[in-house]
Image (cartoon, rainbow, N blue to C red; front, side, top):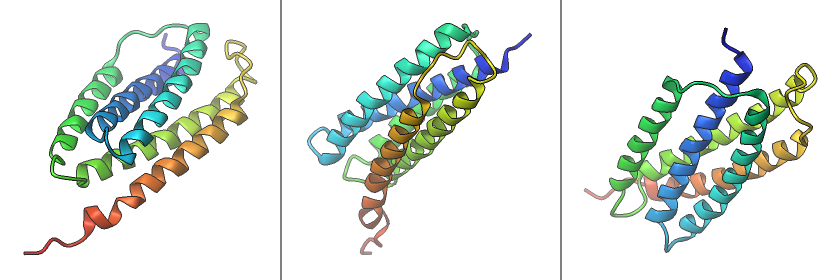
Length: 161
């Protein structure tokens, strides 16, 4: 019998691995720019959140490798290829990478909110300050969204013919 909580946690854990790889790609690609610094800082925070999630998973229990982990791996590789196409400056690949990150951060925020309620039903969920994790996700989202929107002009300005 599959445990829906285990599946839910592991799906989010796979998503966090994708986010880390994407942030590492951004950090590497833009290492001399402000975007690289942002990616490095956010990557560190995502790894901390990932550790919190791992501690929860350790209490709830392991899951078997499934297609969602493989899909995350494939998606991360596809994102790296998109970033490589932006070699001559910031382009749609970088813009979409940041958009993907903002969506993932919103998903993480939803995870923390759900876990705060699940903790009332399932004793396997440890006492964690989910409100603080939600606030942190809000801050991460705001910063990532600022980066994304900051690329609108350079990404979408019409190119001279």
